[in-house]
Image: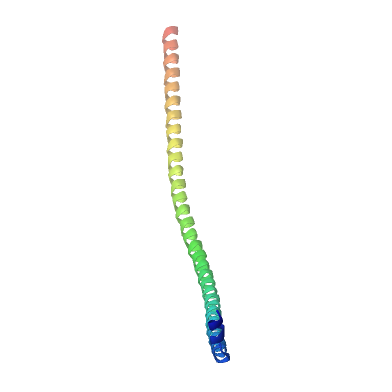
Length: 127
């Protein structure tokens, strides 16, 4: 033990202190580099975040415009289909009215024929 104690001279201790100081200086430089990289990364992320927000906002606006256009086109198509169906129902309704009139005329003609037959039968019975 005594031999080790004697071998630590002031020069060796100064040399060790210098190496420790140099090592800490290197660690400090590395930490500064890491901190600078972190700052650059934060700036880059903030820039990217802003660009992403602008892109999303632009896409959202464009999507809303596309949706509004598609919605208007769809409304037009639905209206055209509805107008076509309305026309078909009007034609069908007109045909039912025509059929109803034919049935009424046929019923009246049959009734008049029946009444004429009864009158003729009564007239022949009386004479």
